[in-house]
Image 1 (cartoon, rainbow, N blue to C red):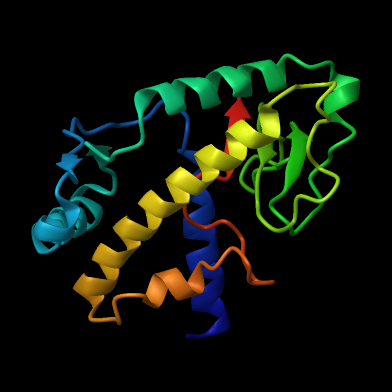
Image 2 (cartoon, rainbow, N blue to C red):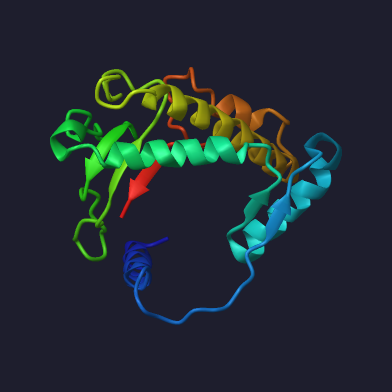
Length: 198
């Protein structure tokens, strides 16, 4: 690819990004709801559904995924309590660039607009959380609830990724090995890693 074609591609991508989140043409689509119950028995069928949804629509919703609704509600309630903390408290746990861990506020700048996203987020990435958890006095139970929820979502994410490994002809544990939370390269690319408030 020549320098000129690289520049043309980059310009095209920026023009495309300018339309994201704005008013523009939309196409009505049904987001597939994929039932992953009886996962071990139905893995090939589920893998086919995930592949079709990902390649034809780009989105899907998982149902019967085995994460209890009570656990989801508890995590969202705890998230709400975290964001309700004073700004000065949350700022003690800043996201360190390149770590995907910690709290940030209106700091991610979109290349197309050169303006910050109007959101705050708190990212959980093991094992980069040293010094980034609110204390028990500030938010009792937060760390335990969020770690349990992260683990449940990571396990679910690994199941989904194992379906993509199947479709791609990779070894069954290819993505499991790539997403080892004990690895120094771990970036929480599966499971629950970010909570946001717009």
